[in-house]
Image (cartoon, rainbow over all chains, first blue to last red; front, side, top):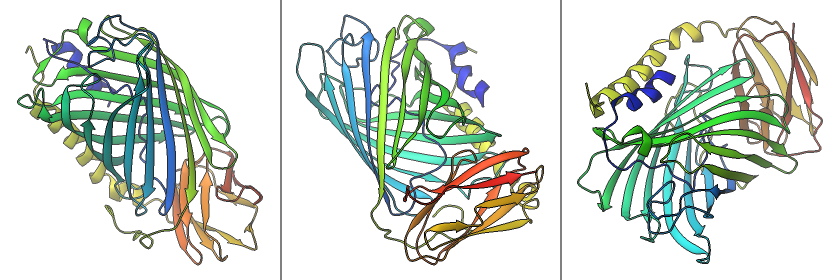
Length: 273
Length: 118
């Protein structure tokens, strides 16, 4: 699994590599419980970034230095194995006010029940609509992620290879870009546990960026649950290449509530719904 | 070999998924042992469930109350919402000897239970 993520670095040429700075989040195998609504806000502040637009996490004209990426995500558990989500992307470039940057809509699911397969597998399909070209000049993008998770004792290892394709706007004639998010977590304490996360992008699959222009980040994080259904994940991120921003602070917090199920329990013998 | 191709990545991902699916039978054969937890009267019974360590098992959880609960175990990485009257089966891998929490994440006042593997 790890080897799969690292192979593209060995074959780099040039094109545009990106990570999604609104979403420094690794998606686990588990989906939102059926009938449960979750409101989440993901935040990333570029503490030490680049001074020109189009560099580091900034895909548009604003520079990444001092940028606050602020995302709101509403997720609902449709069945025991499928959830639906909608995102609102906001941003505050340093000295330029608070902007609406775009919206995203996704479905995510898990296959079978946990522990049935040697690796727990899930899927993720998302449409990203970028409203503001100052942040991204691709109008509409499709993002697909297989989700792969393995629990070993109190460790959870998760990988999300990311395949992204521009459907409208700049880059529509290009192929899929490759990126990844991955994490290793230790379940030490329900309220406070450590983890380490990795995010990155290599550019187009068939025409990758030079390694120095790619973005790769490592985030040591703490995460856990708080009373009243609140969960958090916070930590600093460090860029590993020249193309990366140097230091990022991320802070994700979520609140979940049961609001009522649309569908009955999923069949134990089922694998998709 | 100056580039990695799209078909290679897709083939590698599909291969990983196929290997996992083919392993289904192997794992499923090992979870025959079933213990049970019941939720009623705003608490779990038993509060302490002792199970054998070192063997995969399944726990049947019955929500016999008239409220929706979320059966959750942080240490075991399991989380399932259960409507009134619903019964689920939680499949667990072979556990190391030790204590593993479980609770109703929708109701903070429900006493936490513990699964003891030994």
